[in-house]
Amino acid sequence: MILSGKEILKNIKEKKIVIEPFDESKVNPNSYNLTLSDELLVYENDLLDMKIPNKTKKIKIPEEGLILEPNKLYLGRTNEFTKTEKFVPMLEGRSSTGRLGLFIHVTAGFGDIGFAGYWTLEIFCVQPIKIYPNTQICQIYYHDILGEYDLYKSGKYQNNTGIQPSLMYKDFE
Image 1 (tube, rainbow, N blue to C red):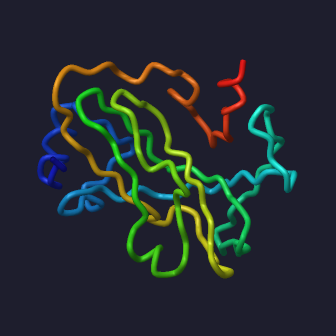
Image 2 (cartoon, rainbow, N blue to C red):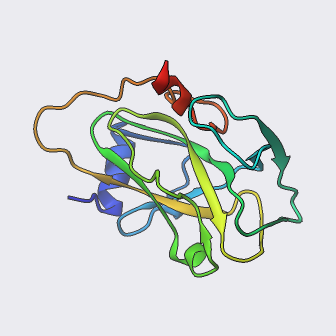
């Protein structure tokens, strides 16, 4: 079952869900809006290799905005740190961003129970679009989990502090 906005708020107050910084005005009927930080990463090479670390460069999103190009992958992150050891966190784009042809996660909207960190966003657009820092760009929602479970242990992305490029190469080690 998906938690209602009121349940999210209750679990934040009980410290079973952590969202920092938290702003009660961003609670929706069954989700919470997360905001875009002021930095992006882009891969330097056109050809990416799963078995090696791929070089990236940082781009700053100025207050006056930044125009994204179609057919290019941008990695961003949320301003908010989230954590829960009781629920399964899920990330989705907001309908307002989707209606502009802006996708905020290519495939990684599913979180693991126990994940703690900032969400890396896999940003892709279908036509040029101007984006701005601190925009409410996506929403997080939470599912109950049934039965016994283990907490996320991988460590590849746990307790991150910045944008995380793919660490898939570690799977080959």
